[in-house]
Amino acid sequence: MAHVEPPLTGYTVIDLSTGIAGAYCTKLLADGGAHVVKVEAPEGDPLRTWSASGAVVAADGNGALFSFLAGAKHSVVADVGQDAELVNRLLASADAVVWSRGSKVAEHQDFTAPAIHARYPHLTVTAITPFGLEGPWRDRAATEFTLQAWSGGIVGLGRGEQERAPVFVGGQVGEYLAGV
Image (cartoon, rainbow, N blue to C red; front, top):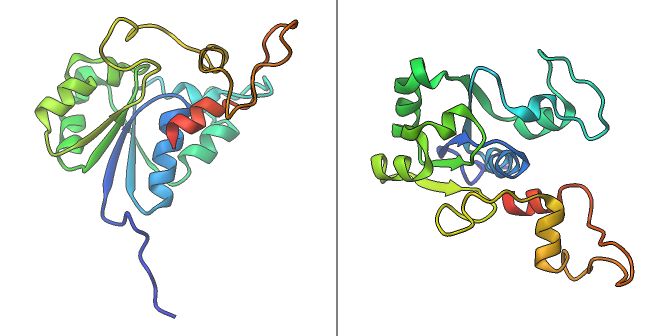
């Protein structure tokens, strides 16, 4: 039986995201054969110590969710004040970048999604935000609950009984769907 290369073999993705959506997106790309490089600020990605159960994750450890989402990726630590050239070299040699607000790297003026797109037009830049990069709601925060409430529920499940407080689908479904 002949060996078949995964479809994204030879494709390089730089992960400048935080949160489940970007991590899941880049996990799927890595699972498809892409070479994914997760760029983190020195304090690390907040998902490293996140726990659904509230269990304490050691400061130098990784929680189960982070381990699952980052398992096939390479990790690079970059202090943008000192390592901007490293981040620029990674972006220059990549095919795509997945970006979201929340890290010191992504928030640096040289590494916002529009700045990356302008400097590296060859890159496919995917920016994951609740309400886009432009427009009146661009800086508005959103939670799983508010997004499900505003959208009328997930996949037609509704929000519960009319006379009761709204409910939402658990498990950060919106984050995973955004990642897909």
